[in-house]
Structure formats: C-alpha cells, structure tokens
Image (cartoon, rainbow, N blue to C red; front, side, top):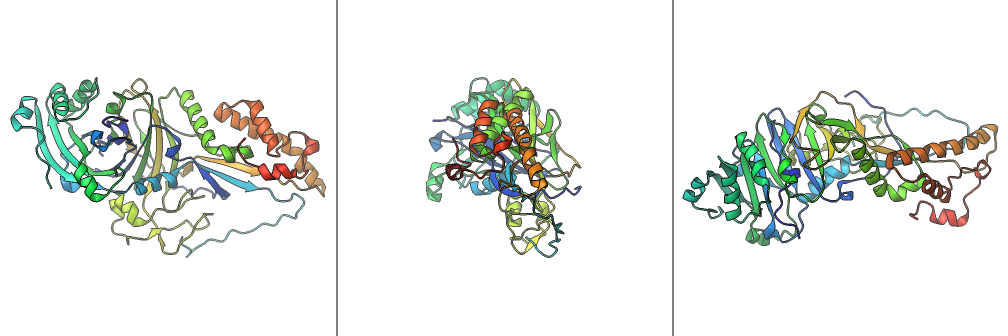
Length: 467
C-alpha cells in the first residue's frame, strides 16, 4: 500500500506553424504513459498569466491514506477548483503518445502511377470542520487561508512562516509527511508561496459512488510558470516518471533550466517490433535517459491540435479542450471537434470539425533528487514546428520478381533489413544477434537467395507474434 501521496507530478505552481509534410502510413500502436511504472500525468493549459492544471492520480491503496501537498503561488478559492474525469486525461495521453506506423511496398514491377492528393476542403473531420485550533496554528506559524470540500476532496489552503511549524501542523493534522520534507517546504515558504492540501472525504466519495480518485483541477493567475517537483523526490523509492501535456495558444513549451530535446523519431525498425512495441519504447527511452545522464526533459509530441497525422486516438472535442482549461477557445461553439488540416492522412473523420487555436506539447521526464535538484521552469516559445515520436514498419514486397526492377529491389532488401536491425540496436541497446534471429523468423531474411520467396505456411501463421 502506498502512503500519503506527495508527488512532483501533481505540483504545479504556475505563471504563468510551419507546415509539415503529411506522414501518411497506417497507425498500428502507441506508447502511452501506462507503459511506465510510477508515472504521473499533468495537463497544463496556459496563456499569458492564466493557467489551469489538471492533476491525475496514480494512487493505489486505502483512500484515507491519500494526501497531496501542492505549493501554489496564491490563495486558491473554492471556485477555482474543479474535479474532472480520468478519461479526459487518458484521452490527451493517448492522443499525444509516440506511435508505430506501417507501410507496404508495392510490386516493383507494377507501373508507377502518380496520384494527386486531393485537398479535403470542406471535409472536417459543505465546509469541513477546522483541522486544528487557530491558536495552535498561530503558534506554529501556520495560517489557514481557506478550507472547503469539492467533490470527494477536503481542501485546505495554508500559508506558513517556518517549515518546521508547517511540518508539525501537517503531522498533527493527520498528514504523513516524509522525513526530509522540512527543508524543501522551507524553500517554498521563502518564495512566499501557499500550500494547497487535499485529502479524501470518505463520506463524499461514498455518496458520489466513485471507485477511483478523480483528477483535481486548479485555476491560477500568476506570472510564475513552473512545476515544483522537489517535494515528490523526498520519499521517492527510485526515479519517477512525469508526463506533462502543455496546451498553449502559440507554440511549444520548453524548460528553461534543463535541456529540452526531442526523442529520436522517424526510424525504420524491423517488423517484429510490432508485437513488442511497448518493450521497444521503454528500452528506447531508457537508452535516451542514460545517454543524457537523466538530466533532460524530452519532447514526445508537439502539434497543432487542429489535425493529427496519423492519429493515435480520436481528436479531442472542443468542449473537452475547454474543460481541460483552454479558456481562450470558449467563444467557439462547444461540442465541435477540431478541423483536420486539408490534405492530411488521418485515421478517422467526423463532420462538424472546427479549427482550434491550441498547440499541445507532450513532455516526458524521468527524475530524482540528485539529477533534478530544481523545480521545472517553463516558457512558451514561438516554435510551431510539428513533431511526433514515430517509428516505422516497412513491409517488403515478397512476391516473385518478374522484371529487372524487381530483381534489383530484392537484391537491395538485405541491406535495408541490416539498417533496420542497426536502428533497433542503437535505439534500444538490444543484442544484434537476437534481433537478427527475430527478423529471420518474420521473413526478413539477410540471404539474397531467400528474398522474394513466399513465407512458409507456419511463418504466415505466426508472423509478428511475440517469441
């Protein structure tokens, strides 16, 4: 059972395109946050000094043991807190997840016909009891600025003058503060920050019939644009995974005090990767973290939400984007869905799509106290270049060659397969001999004499199945 939940992923103290070629291809798999243990998800909608943070909990255990302590830059009123559904955050995660796509080569002996891509034009795709006496709070240098219940959560907004007093107050009030928290709390007190403290109201939870803890949303107005992650490292058992989904009006969001880099993308990988995509992506991300000494924030997706190519999940409707905090699209008709960019190859279309002035940046960071000693500081940039973590399966034409072009095509496949194997080994650190064996079992032979022969019946039956 996990104890009280003090997570960096939920700590959000806030401030506050060039056209890309269509990728096409067929979407076949995604690498969402569920692949990673100890993964926290935060959606941040930000424009100028206004910010809305949606904090999704991965807490497991007795709800009465749950607590969250969030440094915030200002006093938060009840009207600034909202409880939403986990499905909303899951949708954003699925929509922006790194993806696997596949292509199929055509018969090299078939006459090539150039097709003009038609623009799709009109196609659119009750107040809680006080937790302690005022005199005791004052003696500890703690002031209760506000307290209220929203949904299944009892929430208290605190200010403090000393970290030791705040730590004592929290412990006396039933919160399990990890050893070592005092120093971190003190650093936020020096910044004149307040503390948003929430725990589960069991009676309200039972009344609502909720079986899972729902995400908490908080709206701010502040010039600070950051995520205070240091409290989440105090009692962490190993590195944590943090996924941040930034929704902005102008362009990408980057960290200003850590390197922000794009994950490797666009590589062809062997066909068997289709059945092992989750393992592949975890190994690839592990490799990148080690390569960058776990001191880097990675961009996994950056795209205007008016279209996707290919789509890893259905586009997010306007009313859902608005609930996530993109208040600047409030004047648009709610319930509509973003319009797909003309000429884009997408997986699904629906009528009634409307353009959205929303750009999403998906950031993924693995962190601990040693490698991320500072809170994450952000800035919104003017970079509107679309980017996605995308990996490609290229199915070769396996029919017989009936022309010189076909013979040349088959003769070049072993070199292509070797390149795919090298890509996979470089990205993941996997053993090359094992990669070759799995490729051979999937019909990707390195023997030119075997190229072009149809797969045996048992190879067809078990093709792309995990070994």
